[in-house]
Amino acid sequence: PLDVSSKLSVSEIMGCQFFVLVTLLCVWPAKPFLFPTPPSTKFQTFIDVGQRSRAGRGSFPLWSTVVRSPESVERVKEVRERCAAASAEASKASRCSTDTGAEWWRDRAAVDVPGGRDITASDPLRVIISGGGVAGLVAASAMNALGMKVAIFEQASQYAPYGGPIQIQSNALRAIERINKKCYEELVAAGTVTADRVSGLKIGYKKGVFMGLGPGYNKGDWLVRFDTLQPALEAGLTPTVVVDRPVIQQILLKHGIPEGTVRIKSRISRYEELGEGRGVKVVLEDGTEAFADVLVGADGIWSSVRRQLHGLGAGADGAAASGAAGGALNEAESRKMAKESVLMSGSANRRYSGFTCYAALCEHKASNIEEVSYQILLGKDKYFVSTDGGGERQQWFALIREDAGGVDPEPTDVEQEPKLKRLLNEFNNAEPGDANGDVWDDFAHELLKATPEENIKRRDLYDGAPLISQGWSRGQVCICGDAAHPMMPNLGQGGCQATEDGYRLSKELEGVKNTKDIEGALQTYFSKRIPRTTAIQIAAQLGSDLLVDFDKMMTIPLVGPFFLFMTQVSMPFILRFLYTPEF
Image 1: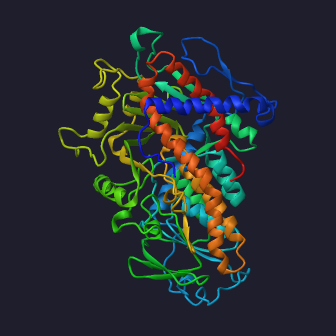
Image 2: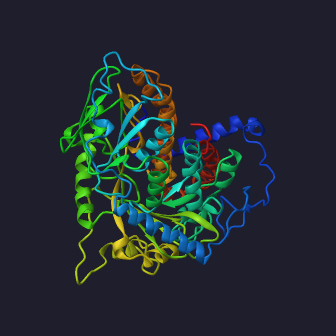
Image 3: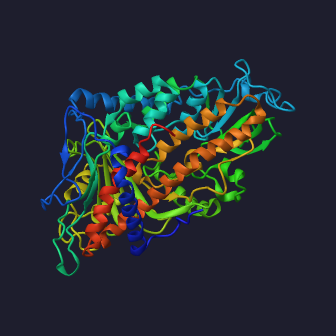
């Protein structure tokens, strides 16, 4: 397996860029066949890219259909009220089950059949999914659509608005469209298109060049811009939309699976395979026993199912989440998770990314909302990410390089906003600047000042090496989503790859005619998914490491411009790889 656990040196980064350049030179003669001229569109938009906005040194044409319409007062109200209503439903655990004693998963005899049993329309495959997040809900929806019996065991006591809005990128939308047309239509209707404006990287503060050998960079200058719309259109896919997490959950609960599919307060303690084709016995922490043909671990980076699947230590599983957005937790739980994650990472063979992440959703109409949907302000050992959250709201992430396990001081009468105070200093837009003496672009301050302290969540970010040799399945048990391929949030593909997992897993299980075929189907699922998720995991980690080294490389004559050029020309290829209709 590739070793992606260490930081890259500048020479290694240059080697990666050189490899990309050689690859481009090799495929360029075939460009008319691989990437035909974009079809006629209503509008042809040319956006200056790859150069600082004030430099005026040429442009790189990006073709796209203009689909952006400024949000009306009515639309803003609709988006915010929909989120509030979904959050209220989540807090009541709507559509979750109440035990009756007659649940199908209590029947051992139905699955524990010597020699296996034939799968028919009247006696379908029975699947238990551990984890009721997006990965679990999508997988359950896909299996339900194919006639399988599905139960979700979720450890939380209720659904909650974990993490704010989620980017459902074009490839994930295609998977959902194939799984359940109604869910797809509801998500697109609820979503705000973000692919209709520019995305890219900016320098966060005024930056000089080594020995003055070349023009410097002003704070807020564009370094790289890219178009996420045209790659989607070329592949015949729907443009990326952003939807609030509780809205996604409620749509999948209502239209994807039968009411009562999700059982809350149900954390899996262990499982036992009953024999080839004879199913799996699942034991919950409260002692409840459940039986199914297949067990799917969709329970996150600290997966209980993966702990047993891969024979990890007892401390390898827990409740801490891996996503950049953090969770809807109180401060006490957040502090507890910060310490537990450090302990779990060693046992679970997960990697601390080197970043702690502050995140929030603020109700604020950004000053650049009509031109920019996603941007990253780069700095020394930190960067600030912002994206349109829909409904005149901005979701932002402040990633700062520091040791794992750190926590902020608790609020006091003297200092009531400790997190906000730190962030305003880290991204200070007035003299004397931050601790490095850098004066930041105003945009970070604009969003921070619009955010209440209680809305800011903090979480250390963890990912992991691709599980190429370990695999994702054993017998009649498998994993998906963050349990299988946790990744940094830079490409926004964590949830999207989990969605692809759910689709592919259901299609492989659809072909099972006898329960003895399950092991082979799960191995096929793994073999089809691992090349793609491995590439995306590595790209996401590489991107995260490169972002904080941008600052160093940009100051080097020739190296800086070459690096920016290679980043710019490689983005369309990366996006075409991500936005594929087949997975």
